[in-house]
Image (tube, rainbow, N blue to C red):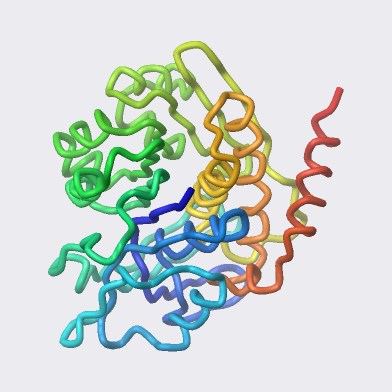
Length: 301
């Protein structure tokens, strides 16, 4: 049961209280695909990069078993670049620059993708691109979508059209409140169900995540860490692990989704221990299982 991840592959410049790094591998699609690969052997990444995208970064992704056949390389273009700076507590991030480059010029396509793959994750991207990806696939069993404040503010109509075709929507707490105009996160999540998704999962950073359907509510804590190096990509890692686990089981039941959310929390905890995907390169599935068990014990009562 294969997974298609449609998202960005970027060159990130990140400054945290720890240090500053320049043009490291990042992007919503990258973080999500890497996380999904811990659970499933068939992950296809759809995106666009420029001629400046280092071959070493492509090799890193291939080492995770990720299929890059649909990662289009534009020979006369430049890769999407993003720069951000984190506050001391990592709860506040300032975007220093966003250069869309080839992402604004070339539309990703699924010509080299197994469009019969039943699990589709639309990582953060313009909503029209997300909707186009849905129309190019063959009735996937599960469509999961992430979004962010810029699309809520600038492409609301396109985003609503996309949400009508989505099974699971993932976004953070401030975005849920922005979309609905409701400062209560639980009410905001429930209100978003009216736009089409069967489930809304709201990420709350160090405070975990909640999942809401018409008939269920689930709250998951974050994995407790003493030290954080870089929070970039944590939400994408959370989502990638979630869909990776569901695809591996080929199970989208309430019980499976709850376990998947915990696995997503655990994989995100590794992501924030280093810059880019550096930490993930040394993670074994036994490490993920150990933190999963520890989180289970932490909330048992």
